[in-house]
Image (cartoon, rainbow, N blue to C red; front, side):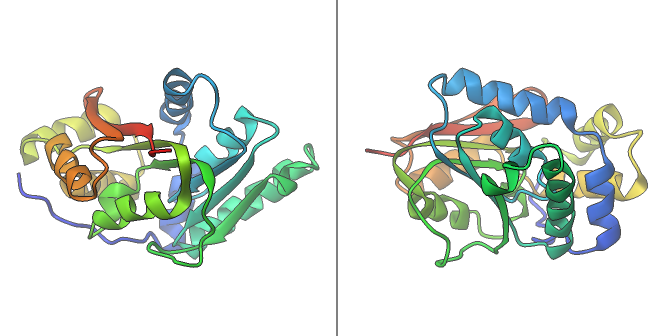
Length: 226
């Protein structure tokens, strides 16, 4: 089916709260496990999480390596407010956490973002971008030579009926706002073939590879040239 872009930002407070309250622990945990498989030596000292939302992955990245500095960025102020609240809550039991984990309001492309990150991670950002080339250009801006790169996103099903099947399989018990957004995201997602073309156009095909994952995702991984 044809791709139908959705809004780039989740700026509604009800929408942000629904995402923060949802249980994504299984998929979030699977992402962290996958990082360990792909990069067994670790992600290095400076990690950036693109499109961090309420910070689910950012907190896990900070826990993955207690020495690493983690920066989560997102373009949605309501999402980052929730991430900051959660950081404040967790810091009561881990007072050094705010020194290692920070959140920043930023919409890509953002020339003001610092570079030199040892790892660039993104979960469910790509399908929000009206111009996917923005993400691939940012990898060059943000990643140090040899940086670990991992991008996970939904992949677009073959037709609306297949999208409906995925909705019923994975989100039938979710609140209505999440069901609506999930279906819209499936329609806005890219196929592995489209992403392969994007990597080729960005001159990243020799450094990164893309493959389907499970019944609804795709993943892009590799290292920037040293």
